[in-house]
Image (cartoon, rainbow over all chains, first blue to last red; front, side):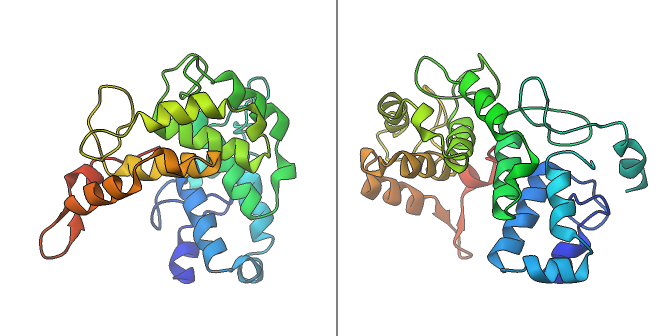
Length: 64
Length: 177
């Protein structure tokens, strides 16, 4: 499940609905909620350098 | 992807520095759904400090209406979905003190119709999705008992159809906030 969720993550930190889809706030929230449910923020940071911060910056618009 | 990245430089911030609200994407549609989404995601990741929470709270408060509810933007009609996003945003920000809980609780309780289902606005039909938006709001306000839970449960179960036990059209057509 984590593989799929991360395959929807864009370089700038936003999530799309599926791989290749444009990023949007609503899917970014869903992505974060799934990561939280899986307690996977540490693994996120292992797989994607500064992943948590990157997603956070995207959610408030610093990278999108 | 490339398109997003190349245009990213032109988008300074999803949070409007003047109004405090948020956009959903690079195209800039703004309303209280995205404000809630940003606060939700950032709080889950422990990164709320990245945004101006006080400004966001100000914006939500400016969306409050005479009936105690909230709309998509200042002056917009109260809607159960936007009530959820605004009350949830204020809950995350620790500012539920700004909510007129008696008035809003009363408005939300009036969403329950005779058949037990909940609607999104006065004079509208019931829809299963509002069970979530309304009841979540009631839970945050501490007023779950203002809805008849047994009748709502009965309504939701009545929406189950077919062998696959899927919830009916009422659920599928409502995309929610």
